[in-house]
Image 1 (cartoon, rainbow, N blue to C red):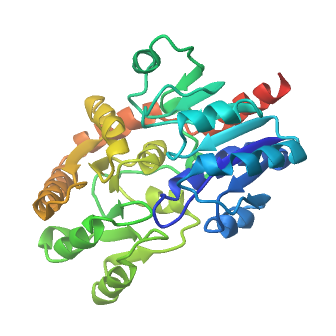
Image 2 (cartoon, one colour; image 1 turned 180 degrees about the vertical axis):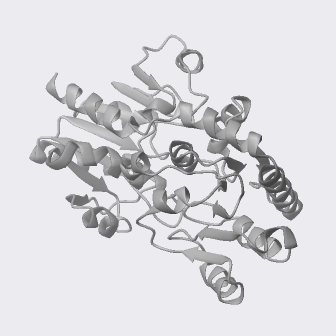
Amino acid sequence: MIGIRVDANETIASGHIMRCLSIARHLKDNCIFIVADDYARQLISSKGFEVFTLGTDYSDMESELDILKELISRLHIDVMLVDSYKVTPAYLSCLKTFCKVVYLDDIYAFPYDVNVLANYAAGACDATYKELFGDALLPDLYLGPAYAPLREEFLLFKSKDKGVVTDIFITSGATDKFDVVLNLVKQLVKLDDFSNMKLHVISGMFNQNADELKTLALQYFNVLVYENVSNMAEIMSKCQIAVSAGGSTLMELAAVGVPTIAYIVADNQVSGVKALVDMEAVMYAGNANCVDDANCVDCIHSIVGCMQSLISDKALRDSLREKASSLVDGLGAKRIAQILAELEKI
């Protein structure tokens, strides 16, 4: 049996759960989800997977080790996929004595004492981990966008550009912590340049601005707000350009082939977004992750400028689409599932 240890709540973005569900789909009945609390239970169960709740504090993972050890023994878990920023060196080292451990990383926090480490960020490379680990033994490494664990739908839909921009995809992820999307939409509806373009706005499950966004949708015919989305790739494929915070959504947009303007809302997004910018696979609009409100204003102003550039330049859109699509083929979840399955056999 393969265990998947992951959490999501008002603080932890839902991307962790979603990418683990993508991997689990390829493991079918051979995996079990393990969570600290019940925040994500319904989401996981709705996808047909069994969930065990530890009843512990997600932010203090070392406190769960005794309970987890008993669960691993009782359920005969041979391999554990861990996707959490709350792990500690002691937690992983102890867990590795119970079963084989695979860790999904993107923050390079410390030398991870695991069997396998996967990082699908565009900038992930062997050299970074060799420097991080120093003299410590490196786990098996699987790095780069080829391992982006996307859902199957992102293989089925592709964006088409007929020479004119009519639809724009806008998202900030599960939350809109710095009000970027809300204030961006408020600005766009006042600009004549965007009056005839549909704004497809994703309101994530923890978006504190959901009600205000829905009010804007009632006031402006071209603002479309989506909640509890189950057809994300289909919505993306309707659009000729996109605006997105860093994270897994950038990989999804790359797979669908939507030219994208990226901005940062969390420290762990910096290196991945920078790498994509260096590869000329996305446009960069700035970092909204700052206590200074002026920084968010500058970010929104930059987003609008990038949007205007993309709208007027089809060659630029084509270039971004081609470079992003070449990085992400949508088969990353299957590749990670195969790694887990092979490790279970050892």
